[in-house]
Image (tube, rainbow, N blue to C red; front, side, top):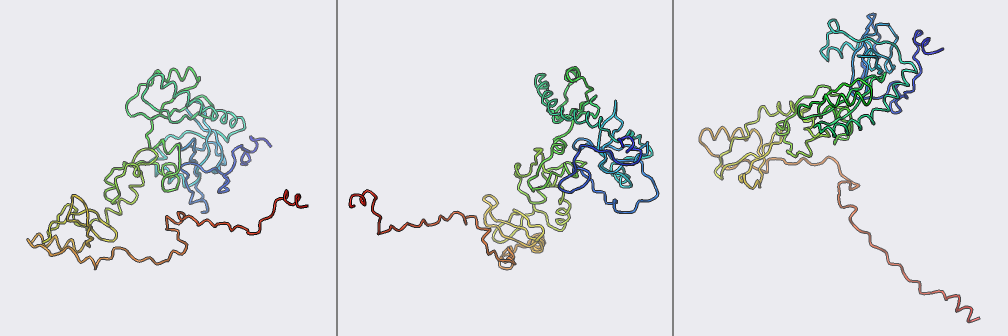
Amino acid sequence: MDNTEKEKSGVQPESNISTCDHCQRHEKCSKLQTFDWLSDIPSSTQHFDIVEVRFKNTRKEFFINANSLRLNKGDIVAVEASPGHDIGVVSLTGEIVNFQLKKQGINPEGYEFKKVYRKAKQADLDKWYEAISLEDSTMLKTRQIAADLKLNMKIGDVEYQGDRTKAIFYYIADERVDFRELIKILAEKFKIRIEMRQIGARQEAGRIGGIGSCGRELCCATWITNFVSVTTNAARYQEISLNPQKLAGQCSKLKCCLNYELDVYIDAQKDFPSRDIVLETKTGQAHHTKTDIFRGIMWYTFDPVNMVNFIPVPVERVREIITLNKKGKKVDVLVDTSSVALESPLDFKNEVGQDSLTRFDNKKNKRKKKRNPKRRKPRNDKSKNS
């Protein structure tokens, strides 16, 4: 039974794409993978014709199954493109696609979807693999051409269409670039239709992928689709040191994860007094240095220039001192330091010494070999005696 007969019968045609070895699923793991939490729920009588199809890296689009094909997650399909057709992998089917449309702000009734032509045949796959094999060499040649034209832009990625009639060139540029001459040269050299698409640094990092400083895969490559601006105020609210090397991600921008817990920190600091208020005491003026938000402790010092001798003060005590200062009264001391618990005792005991940084520095004493008093005579001496 050939692929055409398999399509009519609803059986998936064979493809050369291997399954994921890690999770043993039929579809391959990809960037921006969406978990279908409705897959184990019995399907309703309502039929959903819209499917989500993923392409290279983070590009995904929605298509309508006009031919009523039996499509499953992981099927390789030929879809409508402009011009020609493209090859992609079905990433979502069924009712969950409606939730994705709502998330993207797409109205299914007023949106004009492109069509799914058919399940990919072996001839489509061969041409698709051939197009994929040309992407790296095309990107390197394009970078050289752009450098020869002295264009202030970086070609980050190239994506060929499934039928090899068109290619999308993703580039990064800080300012407006006139690439009309570049398009003419590329169209003449590669004999394809050229589309230039500008992306940001965060989008480029998501397309390339990688491992973050936390040890997990980059968020922009796994689930982030809408990039929210990140400022240094997020680090200030969370009492994070303003170290550019630690705050910057692989895109050389501020890490997106700085915004994850920002609302929690802002909400926790609503009842905290202002940090700009100077506490008046009989000893002198106490200036704020840092805050332990979740323990409710604010640290002050009497020497704001050298920043030494930090004194921890509970938030309730700070409010009390501010109230007294407004009445023109000065307190004797900020707080009794013995009443403030700085560190809670550990509830475990380290028996193996894992926290010792110098456990491998101690050199072992070399044992001196004892000389054997009974030394064997050389063979030459034995022969002489004999």
